Length: 139
Ligand code: CMP
Image (cartoon, rainbow, N blue to C red; front, side, top):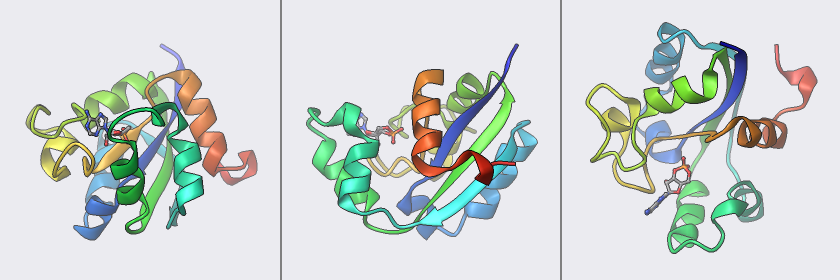
């Protein structure tokens, strides 16, 4: 297994629930090292560019409006096979279908407000980490 990095976003609905610390604790007890953290509020253009691969999807506008509705917490997580393990920890995209004990089952509200985003491949992780962090901002 290879040590990898993946990008996590705690979405506005989870930030509003005051569970940032709880979620970070779950990252750590699941074997992830948090090597970069930023809290921010995205604008429309930044969000559209970040989610460019979904620009033709029916849910794109709702996703953008939701992601700019409040602060988010972006972090970079490191461990062996980080992309796959982080997606397992998040659970299914639709919180209603996510297995009990996964983060989206616990903190997600619906498809859009599903509490967390995670990179879906190593290639996406490289793009997404670079989108938010300079290399000298990562420990
Ligand atoms: P995320 O991991 O942030 O990546 C893209 C987001 O699009 C996804 O989580 C969901 O919030 C949203 N999404 C994906 N599929 C659907 C869908 N079928 N209906 C509504 N939103 C979706």
